[in-house]
Image (cartoon, rainbow, N blue to C red):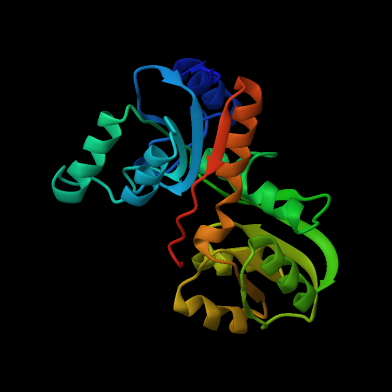
Length: 254
């Protein structure tokens, strides 16, 4: 017989562990439980995005609690028609619960996207930086490493190529890390003394700004840099509640 856990107990624990109610976020994040099921969980899935594809894969693999970083409401208010109606029908028909954690998962000191990626990159003695919404969104590390070695570490960590704009020093000394789409923050990041900035994606003008500022800009991909947190959270909940889990990989190419 598969192990069974209470959805309400898992949600209560995750909310408290991630400080969901304490962390201000963008309204469309709607952190926490977004869709409840009948109350029983036997298998956890983890995905970066709540999409038709990840929901169909979760159902196919017997998942009845799907944990995501970007929830159902990122596009804002949308009519429940067409593909969106069909997606919600699938969720309800297959008794799938959906839990979303955006900034609370980015920021977590152990399970967070930033903390997990920093660890795989070999960063030690990191400290929070780049405050917004009353929280520090990223981590910074003071260490000497060549930007080429750092780019190789990043590619190895992500399992794919990283884009590097080598506009700063060949030897990085002050490295800033914010997973996801933080490239547009490059001016404010540079003001904090960062000479090498790692993020997921950036607008075109950020590459020009990096040259103007003398900052190395490394882009690992929005999706790729945000796979870490949902995996870590699912694994943690799996251990705590004695449930199986799996990662549902659905890259966007961005």
